[in-house]
Length: 159
Image 1 (tube, rainbow, N blue to C red):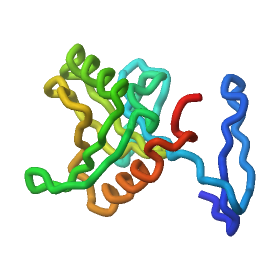
Image 2 (spheres, rainbow, N blue to C red):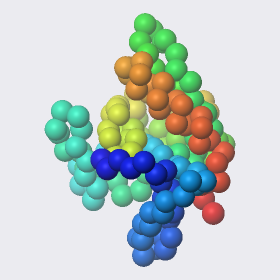
Image 3 (tube, rainbow, N blue to C red):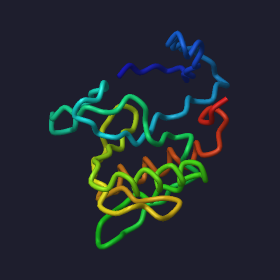
């Protein structure tokens, strides 16, 4: 990771061309963090390494992204630290329908290119959010903070 004394803002221009432009500005708002839930698929075109080094194959398109998140909090649930992620109406409906039709499917929670957790869908999700855990407290707090700072931000919403 490169560090700079100057704040950075990442602008997404020419999405179809895949252009990623970086500018420096003292007043620039930081780019939206990339957080997504992606279906693990043994034949998927995307790959990413888990912390243990195992390579996961993923579907091309994420199931949920930061655009779908409306907030998050950290709680102690069944004696474990978990991240509770709240979803907007479209995201909640998408995950409910997907989980209903895909019990047994594995999904990965990825934040800024790092696999945070993978989990198998055991039961259909029936609420407007879900939990991710167990996590280390510092990691859960940082993720909740990033989600809460960026929920509703125009940079995180589709144009």
